[in-house]
Length: 155
Image 1 (cartoon, helix red, strand yellow):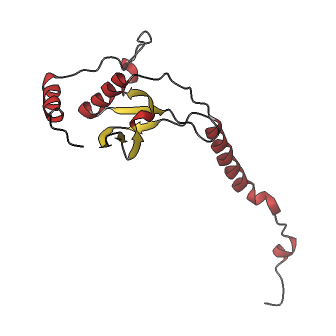
Image 2: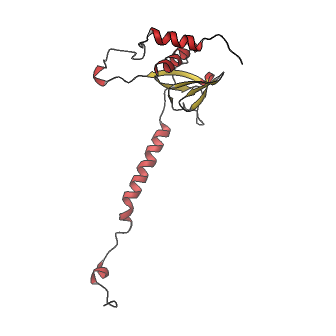
Image 3: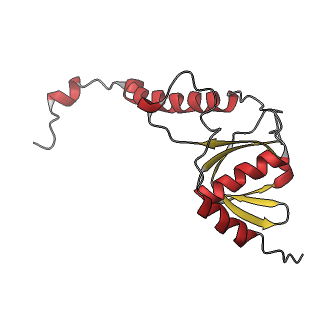
C-alpha cells in the first residue's frame, strides 16, 4: 500500500503564488501607510515668546497638563518634525527641558499647546481657543511659588 499513490495527490494542483497574496497585501499596506506618515506635512506654527512658553510649562507642572511642543529644528528633508508630546517634568540643567522622557533644549521650543481632554458633548463650535482659560486655584499657585522661588540659586 505504501507503493501506491493516492489519486488525490495525482490530481492536486498547487495554487502557486495565490496563497501568498494575503501576505504581500498586508506588507504593501504597511509600507504605504509608513510612506504616507513620512510625507505628512505639519504646519509650522508661529514662534511664541518666552513668557508664553514659561506660562505653558508652569501650567503643565502645576496641573499635570499634557503638552504638544513644536521644535524649531527641521528634519533632514527640511520638513517640520512631529510634535513632542508629554508633561513637563522640570529642567535637567539651565537650558534643557524634560518633557516626559525626552530632553529638549529650551531655545529649540517654537510653539506649545496644552492638550486638554474635552468631552465631545461639551464642545461648542463657537469657542475659538479651548486652551485659553485654565482653572487655577490660589493654594496651588501659592505653594508652587513658595517652593520654586526660594531665592537661593547656585550654578
